Image 1 (cartoon, rainbow, N blue to C red):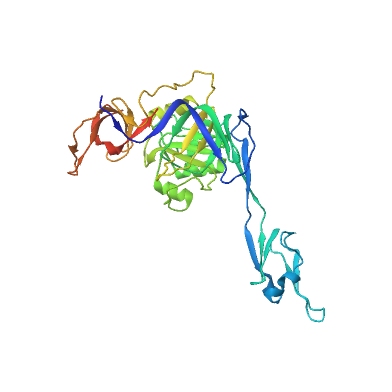
Image 2: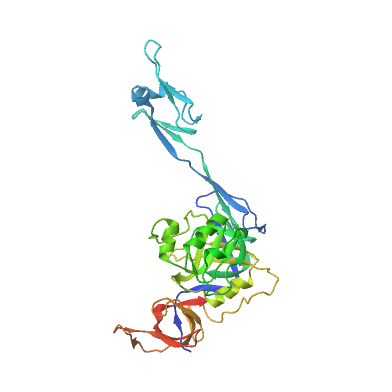
Length: 376
């Protein structure tokens, strides 16, 4: 049987997922091997150095830089509080002394006789890593973090903004091709992950922000709506740090595009369950997709952990795929044929192609580079 290879998104009703929860710098691991953790369990913690506040004390008290150490009321390594006197000039005949107060709280890190400056290191900044995925700790990485394992329903999206969050899945649309507008959002969705169908509108996102929704997952979004929500054009290759009050995940693409029926059905079948989502997306080297993780009972028989009979990335007859270029952009179907010989395209160029049987029943021919695998 003919085969080809192409990148793809995973949509699986059951798979074993390993979440690597790693600190950015060395720190303390709070969880132990075998611990059962919740999404909000802190599994590792560290402290980053605080900000530096420079201050030219010599200028402020009209002293020579070389005289500064003997005029300081605090030594290097001493704790200082904001507005606390830290230096005092000798004055004239013991009078008319000038005093300098600390502009910030922290530790006096350096006193320079060359420049007359001091450096105050601000409060350490705590950095905590949560489990994100409920499950069991299966590996502890000393001073780094842990690996959490669980059986999940896994859905990868095309694009997302916003970071990690969790909540209960709630369906806001009745079908995979119904748009998500403001009328579908209400106050009862606070803290939940709202699942739409087709395009999510800017009005729906704003209402979700006001209601305290944790995340929205839908088929598409218009780039003008995304700009209106962010306040700027998103031109970076990495997302996830946006501070908009909620996480947005698009499963199919930009524009008036419906969620794949298979994806919608999987989310609908898990409505009412807790889920963890992450909108972080990286589209260059080290590709990272936004994800929805729905923990499953390890002892249940929900889903099918062996539904994929092909190797990851392999295109074969019957493989589910998504077309990612016009004129069939966003269409879902299966591979109907994989012709060996390159064919002449409408542009006049030659390319390897495949035949796709769309959900409508129509069979179309598209370049192999224009499709993305929907991995089980």
